[in-house]
Image (tube, rainbow, N blue to C red; front, top):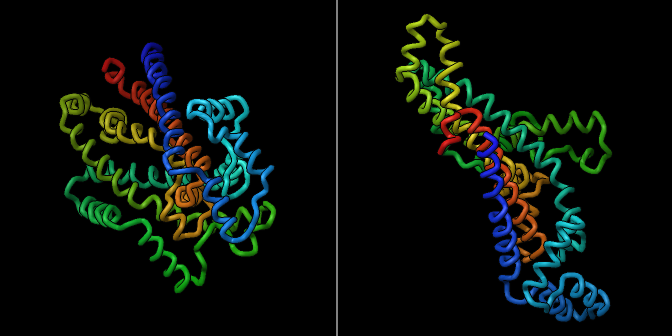
Length: 328
């Protein structure tokens, strides 16, 4: 097991270096830079640019210097000082902008993950064990509906139902009186009342997909000889199912953890825009549209690094869950 983990860690080093280089190259792809566009826009409006501020920004990021010098300054700032650069559009440090929205993004993503697993895991087992029963047909029907319905459309439907039927505005995570209020038990309670909508919307398709995956994998395992042998020894049926075939069928759940970490940061951008959620997804979209290079590049670097780390955690858990993977 130790050699397996060490081998995966060795793979991470060149991968992370390559990711950082690609992320920085993407920052440099747009013609010119944000400062060029900003100066041109201000001069068109008849506004003179502060030369001292412009010179300080150029000096900080090494604009006009060779690309390898700029890469060294960007990476040294991240590694040594935790400085991801300055957002040109927001005129604030990138790290502050990201951390400001990261807490609510992680809360929504974790709540959605727990919701998906709590629903998909037992229904998938039931559908496989009670194959072709009425319950299986019902789960299959709603599973296909969940897979076929876009998340943003479901968000619009729930917003309409919430407003027309319950008289509640389900957009955002807080009521208007709590948006800028300090944290208190009343604000936490208000957050919990609004959290169910994005949790259901974001988890609908994932729940439907995992139900189908769990059902298919468990059906493959239920007919194998080790299950027949365990049943012949007199093990109780549910104990047999949960101890042996379910453990093997859990591999897709564990392998999906590799994408969990970046999803915790990025969230679902389209749903966040529809529901007016203060998460990192709309911030990333705005940075890309405005060509805010350092904000967008830092997002890209962070998501890539989290994907690599999540894949490592997923590989380790899979090796612990299924020892056959260690030797592949």
